[in-house]
Image 1: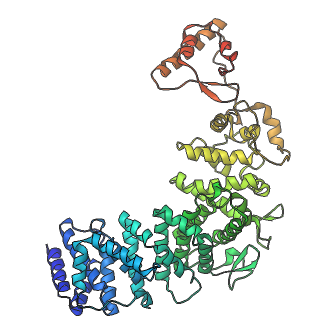
Image 2 (image 1 turned 90 degrees about the vertical axis):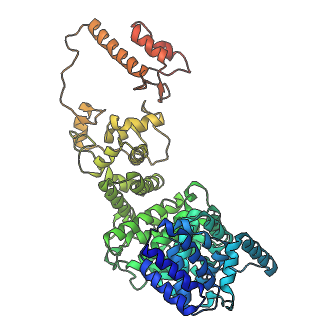
Length: 590
């Protein structure tokens, strides 16, 4: 009840129209509510009234401190999704955009006035209330000329809140072309005039616009050259220079190995992560389409910067992990042929070299992937981006594949431990091949399959037939044929330990097992047949109750369902000849 009284008191002081009274009231309200993110429903109408009054003050030529207090109030009120109506009109959003310095002047004054008149007419009583509050005050000068960056920041925060909570606000923001205004300021990435807060919320606003509006996303890419614009922004944020083509270094630290660089401080890291998220939004479909030569050059430029991000460290373990996660996510969006930038830098002292190629970035990706695997949390969201990236890199770059294979699938010596048992990276990856999440399972299997050059026998050798069966069945490779794939014909090397044990390895489990007693020892052929028919009958019963779906292996290597009538015949007629199925081209082999 006290809050209700305070809000009514603030409204009363605002309605006087006196600047000093309004300023005092708003500052008191803002201080009390600054950390409030939940609101009483009974005060909903009063908050809307306060919002209208504040907008009216923003139209007047007042002291900067009063404008700042008004914008702080808008920021607080815009946290409430139920009270956004006063702020989502075209007029209100235009006002906030002008204070944020991102308003775009529409060509043709008469046309613009017509649009504004229509917007004000649609607002009805709400628009009239704002006009009444504006009486007696001169029209405000364009706030974009105001150098007070606190005002700009508060306006940007308010617009971000509106986009986050309200679809109408998203539509109006797109219609007002706010992305153009933000892009103009983003071009000033080397201008020291703008502080961290303005730069950060420019980027946050761009992220929200590109995440929520497909049309804005396309506009940023095509009309505003977003990939190049944000690539330059990321380069400036990280303070990079280019010692050689597609080779980056931190300015002032040329020649210093990445692991010896000081960690990135909090503010540039936060801005860099926003840029990475925006670039992810506008490139999410890039790796699935062809790009021309000019676009490929842009993506390689970005890829070189991402390589630097991958090898850099940020202050704080959590922030560093988040920074690398966004980097990996974006790398996965780049066109596959452009991933060669990861291997471009020359081998230097301290670099990881393989076949004469610098593998620092690939090794970092592998370590990042293993760390996500060890964490075991939300594997679909955390593990798959890096695992998919490594899979595709290995598929198209021979050196990358051979390096990864040397790390993940070294020559096999231990033939007595199951592939899924142990703490080696191979063991961890084989374990996820039977993960409950199909995407995780398939991605893990695909990575190992590519490292085996999509060779079925080699794949089974490292994983065991039981673990490999899912991928082989999905690809129609259960009969052992080799899948398509362009790989070098290097010979398979086998250790002496593997050669000696090869004949005794159980292909299903992938290890040498102790001889087990024969459960059918001492049984006559008739007894064996009876046991077999019992098993078929159990399959039929489970199938009839929809607990399992019996399958059969087709001539093409794929699995097919066994028809219920065929299963019934097998269960009740021992003389049923399954060969009848084989004689038909349309039916698979049992």
